[in-house]
Image (cartoon, rainbow, N blue to C red; front, side):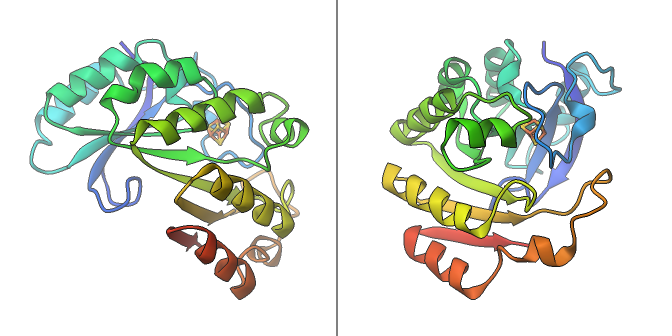
Length: 230
Ligand code: SF4
């Protein structure tokens, strides 16, 4: 049905205020330089987790977790995502999803099943900047279309940005915040980048520069819900 890289049975951090199981979908079309899940990027990589494992696990999770988050990788890459979500929903679980919004057509098909979305914003909304932040791949117009679908859906969602100092500056966070709040986004979070194994040059103070009183006060004013996630 779907290609799964890994399954987390119990999480309190992947869906705010919910206890969830998390399905890490195998495969992502992007190559963000700060990716923490590089082993999930190639859709052809084999794993020990399967759709059957997930169903078996969920049969024993009723009443223990509120919902299931489809994470990644990029869930929208897989064509069987709508029936997979439908099956899990019919088992009595709420459905959440983490996405970069790379495919608005695929997003449209899963909107009926979703209760919540965590939407990654990689960079300011400029074609070249977005491409750089995704390894030269993303099409910003398609990301914008996905965000607009979410805004018009009435589904609860957050936007969030991983503040990698190699591709973003504090000035970019102001720019992203202005764009999102103008579009009508109500919830935005900034997440601290923790250098991935291959990054030997970024220091902790480089990563900390996004977390100061001025930026946080600005973001608190712009959004109804804001967190600095360190
Ligand atoms: S979109 Fe997510 S999974 Fe895909 S490369 Fe970027 S950080 Fe990694």
